[in-house]
Amino acid sequence: MYISLYDLGLFILFTILIVVSGYLIVVLHRTFCVLGHILGILNTHKDDINEIISGLPDALINLNALTISLKAIADQTNDALDSLQENVTDTVDGLLDGIESFTVYGKVIGEVFRLIFSKNG
Image (cartoon, rainbow, N blue to C red; front, side):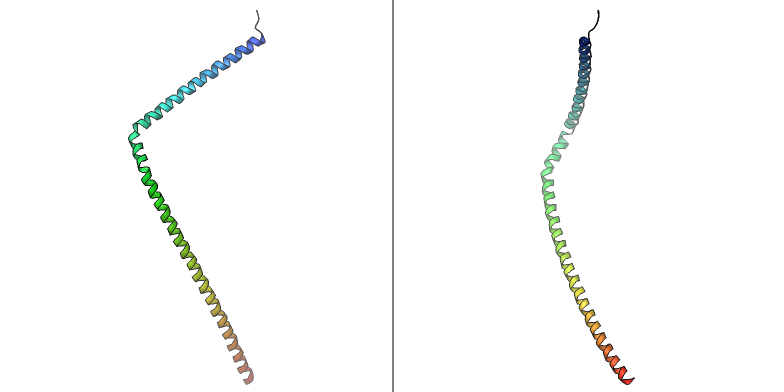
C-alpha cells in the first residue's frame, strides 16, 4: 500500500486549513474578549461619558468665541504693526531729509570758510 502525491497534497492542504482555522478561532476569541473588556469599561464610565458629551456644545461655543476673539486680536495687531511700520518709515525718511540738509549746510559753510581763508592767506 502506498500514498499518492495527490493524497499527500490533500492531507497537507487540510492540515494547513485546520491549523489556520484554529488560529483564526483563537484570534477571534481574543478579539471578542478585548471588545467585552472595552464594553465593560464603557458601561462603567457611562455617566462620565454622557456628562462629557453633554458639555461638548458649550465647549464648542466657547471655542468659537475664542477663535473670533483671537482673529480680532490678530487683526488689531496687524493694524498696529502696519501703523508702526509707517511711523518708522516716516521717521527714517525725515531723518534722511535732515541729514541731507545738514550735509548741504555743511558743504555751504565749508565753501564759505574756504573762500574766506583763501582770500586772507
